[in-house]
Image (cartoon, rainbow, N blue to C red; front, side):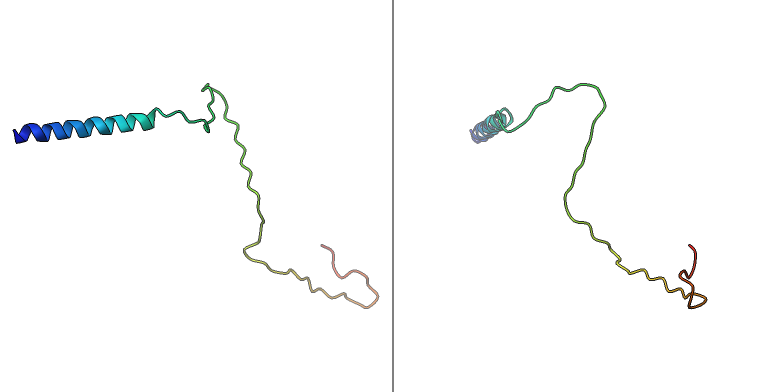
Length: 77
């Protein structure tokens, strides 16, 4: 008698779990977009907006002296 009661409780629990799972799996969602699957090239574009900062910010200074006072250029690069 006790074995039959345990079996009945397990069967009712399994049926309830199956019913709840089916209702979640077959729910219609209006916020999803669908697309027909076909073989082809995947066009992928990634856009991220934001700001860009350098990790190591240094000033570059060139300290070259002219050979004489009358010269306008000190060196040729």
